[in-house]
Image (cartoon, rainbow, N blue to C red; front, side, top):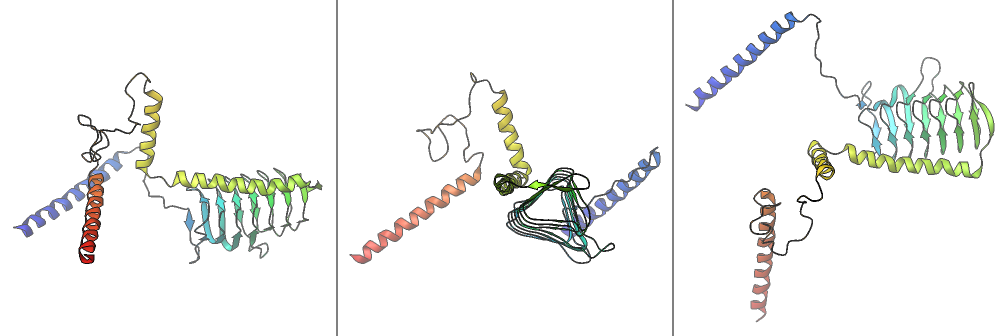
Length: 297
């Protein structure tokens, strides 16, 4: 009997799928503008020629809309922000520790015009919409928004590239300098306060990235619960009944005050199971203690 029922269900499901396909095709013929819906795969981490990105387990944050592609190595406490692209498809990209790649920034390498990989050191802050192309950034470097550092360039430690600056190919920027302009030129040496600011900014970005990582890790149920709590707090009149925030002295075994239904085992059975396990564990411990006392006597 069970076998016959299974066959009937299987045949009905196949017929339903066939009918659905026929209706879908018929609907497509009625469309004025043809449209094919496709599932777009995630581009957060993409392997190229069998080489996948290596991101430290202790990395602060890689945004859901960021793309990390190919031979990319990323150290701990580093972050890649929304819309940024780090592409190690024809060469290698190395990102150190406590470094941030800003929103919509592009980090790429070179193979055709020169065999240049991209190396980014520790405590580096790359601003939004910046382009880091086949060059080397040493430790403690700050790159301003929309700045470009091109093929074969080297930026030594404790340096700042101003927003919108264009560092032409093959340029070497010495340690402790401020460069700006298009093409970029040395403006002056950095002060001690400005050098300290580079490190402080990198640390601040790392902490901010941890907060974004925490928020992005939430599932739908957490987000919905937080939204409901926020909406309740915004709309509930203070003169109306407020959620229970006090400890009920008449609470009986976690069931709440008689006559009220709160967060009880009736609505959350897992709480009842938890309390049952705790009670059984306590009873076993008491029994073991009593048996030990008998043996001593």
